[in-house]
Structure formats: C-alpha cells, structure tokens
Image 1 (cartoon, rainbow, N blue to C red):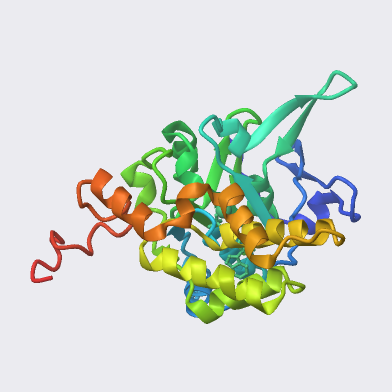
Image 2 (cartoon, helix red, strand yellow):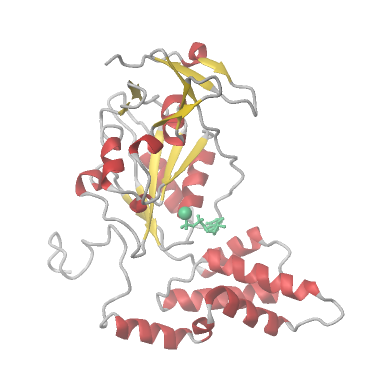
Length: 327
Ligand SMILES: Nc1ncnc2c1ncn2[C@@H]1O[C@H](COP(=O)(O)OP(=O)(O)O)[C@@H](O)[C@H]1O
Ligand SMILES: [Mg+2]
C-alpha cells in the first residue's frame, strides 16, 4: 500500500473559510472536517493545563508527543480542558464524539455517494487533525467499542499512522498532530482494552474545583448572575463535592441559568430568589439534591460502604496498591 508523503500546501486544494477543504492523499481526494471555534477559556487551576501541554511537547528530535487520557466525573471540565490546551498551542481543534456504535470508518474515512454517482471520501475530525497537524480530542472515549479502538493503535504509538481500509490509504500523522482522550467516570461505558490504555498515557485526573475557582467559572459563564445566587450555587456544589457526590460545574451552570430565567420571567409577580433557586435545584437535579447528606448516606449504604465510583487510573493509589504496599 502506498504511503502518504507530506506537502500539505500543494495538496490542499481549497481552504477558504466556510468552503469545504479537500486534500489529495495518494490519489484519493478527501473532504476534510471543519475545525471547531476556539472561544472557550480555561478558568482556575492552571497546573492540570500545564500537565496537558507538557504531554504535547516534543523536546528532542527522537521524542514523540504523548496522548493522555483526561478522566473525571461528567461535567467537571474535561472537554473544556482539552479545548483550552489546543487554544494555548494556537492549533486547530477537532473533536470526535465517541459513542457505543462508532465504527472504525466513522473514526477514519467514510465513503459517501456524491450526486454525480461517484464516491466522495469524507475524513473524520480525527483524520482531518492527523492530516493537517491539528489537535483531536476523542471525547468520551470509553463509550467506544474495542473494534474501533483497535484501528487507532498504530496512530497512538511510535508508528503515528492510521490505515483506512475503505479508502485504501495509509495516513501518516503530520508532526504537529496532537491527541487526547476524555473519559467519564460513570458506569455506562465500555472497558477500554489494556493495549489501548497503555498507549493513552499519562492519566490526567480532573478533580472537583476549589471554591474560588468554581465561583470564577460560574461567573465567567453567567456574568450577569447576582452575587448571592452565585454564592448559593457554589456553596451547594462545594458541599456536594465534599460528600463526593457527582454534581458538577455543569449542573451548577444549568441550575443558575434556570433560576435566573424564572426570576426574570414575570416582573409583575416575581418569585423570591430562594424560591427560584430551590425550584431550579429540584428541576435540574431532582428532589434528592435538597438533602445532600441524606443522599450521600444512602449512596454509601447502597455501595456497601465502598467509596463512590473511582476514577480510571486511580487503581494503584489505594490500600492494595502493589507498587506501594506500605500505603
Ligand atoms: N475550568 C473551567 N473553565 C471554564 N469553564 C469550565 C471549567 N470547568 C468546567 N467548565 C464549564 O463546565 C461545563 C462542563 O464542562 P465540560 O468540559 O463539558 O465537562 P466534561 O467534559 O468533563 O463533561 C462547560 O460549560 C464548561 O465550559
Ligand atoms: Mg465532555
């Protein structure tokens, strides 16, 4: 099978904003995906962002970038962190949303019947990043099945290439191509096979934000929220975090948005702030969020006094840690 040699400038045929971009690879014309707009800022804790950026550094001609996995509860900021990493590096960002029924060709190149009756080849966001030297976030990677992961093994190690059976080409990664995978810590996901996990290193675990950071994040997203509503929301989230309940910044944003909309809705008969906030809590998170301690207690009992679901990558940091038996 012929391999792709680089010379992007002459291979790129169209790249006007808004127009579809195509690239000729080994005689096959690929239609590229559009990069995503990078307006999202990362607020608060910089250390985790620095760790991500370190993974993507190349510090010697024999060095290769790493493709880390970013783990943490849903809504905690994993995708945002990855987006912020691409923004810091001033690279185009592509996001591939992984799902249980993602097929290898969805991840790579999909043939589409064109109007003329010919076949057009559409490069996925991942292959578009691979070819043009962008950043690709494989979002919620542990929703994806093993067959699709298997096709990525050579891309994620020193070979840095990927083979599309459908288009009959081997695509070599541009030297600026960077990748990371986000993984949710919830039960509704696949086990990612070990040989893939060993290529997705290191694990960057995103914990709950500190109080002042969480307040700054809420204020960034809802700058028009009154201070007392922000405080109510942050106090609630921080209490939930202390009890290791999975309510997240995203929940806080939705809660606050709904409460403020209810307050603004009918100036003639306004709800009180407390009423609006309480209603939002119930509508966004359900009645059980009214009593966090009771909820934490019930969860703990249901799990047989086990700690709440632990993070991927946390496995070696508990009492039975074979590397540190003294812990
Ligand atoms: N550090 C942060 N800076 C800015 N926004 C944040 C931060 N953490 C979380 N958010 C916001 O919280 C919401 C959920 O974040 P997201 O990255 O989608 O979470 P996840 O990918 O972990 O499910 C988004 O609206 C995001 O912008
Ligand atoms: Mg996400």
